[in-house]
Length: 516
Image 1 (spheres, rainbow, N blue to C red):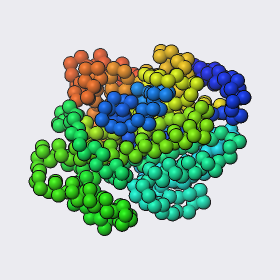
Image 2: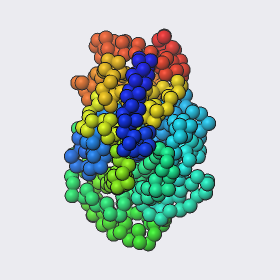
Image 3: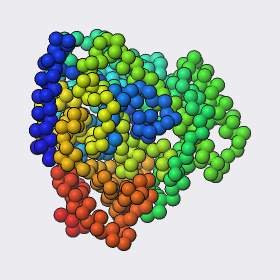
Image 4: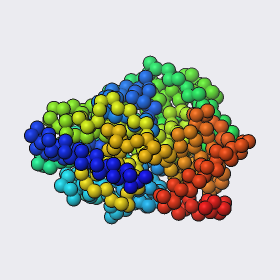
């Protein structure tokens, strides 16, 4: 299948190149520019284009409307750093070496950015990097120190100096991105990666977005009060809105403005924060909530802040789109918006990510490329963050290294690849345990109809879900009558994927069960 996809990708690249050459009289730069925007923890179900009628995301929706939306976009390891490492390398965590957050990413390996540089592209990364090392393969970078702060964050520049920048992080990232675009060498094509901190915990909105959703009473997910029968790992996790979400740090109740991130606020910033959250705290204290009423209140408060943070994210994406229009760059610039993985917005009673369940496995992916992607295109094929680097290289006319495990998505833009020639399943492997959320390591396969998950280590068992009958993944049918008819073929496919992607650790676990 990979050989067929590469042939299709090459043929389609020739088609693109021919079209670019024809259009060269309009644009001296035959190679397209690329703006790749990657947010943090932004759930697909929090975006209008993906069906949310409450969230205000007109600019992300605009990219989808003017280009394509991928309805089945997944990640290989639902965690911030590992997702970025897969993006950079086009390889699974076990091969790129970055399985866990807060470790050091090996920038000495093949990265798409280095290949772009070899193909005369200017490259830049602005914003969140969070890989424990400095970027390589980028002519310019200005990255957040570590996880970064929402207000007055520290940035590390290409010169390896660190400086505090006053303002709100999303606005600063946009300004830095535009400043670089203004100063670039206009004789070369560019690839700019914009790494957003939003919408990461603890969800501090921009001042202008405080209270943006206070009039909304959000519908509670059907499985919000999940009791996790038949799902041992889900029962043992530590990521519930009920027990894990903190009133003070996460929901800003009775804040101490002399500690944590709030020490970074200027007096001008602190005043509206105090006015807004002190009023929220007083109302909460007066209600004296407990039990179910308290959990429901926490859920509402969580979403109000989460979506308020997303407002700034979307508004700044609009600023980037407007800049490209104003500078006459839009026609020859590919714009991609993704999140590093999905996120729980109360499903299963949770926030955070990690599990192979749908809300964290699935991630938004929208792309605009005028004249080459038909407006309003909807793509149903299974894609993953393995494919991001090969796609960028294919668009740029660069050779995709054999060691990259993903496939270029370019053939899907013009439907050059038949569904039967594309992948029909995705493979997933998560490692980080026990901190910070006590989610047991697991790997598995997701097809159009089923999901099979193997938990291992501290929790040693299988889960099987019928996604057609049970889209909320509440009923583990692995031990049910006649489930072998489903699980045995899935295990064969799982082993084939494990071998294809060279995941020796997973293979050894299954070999101990007598599976080859």
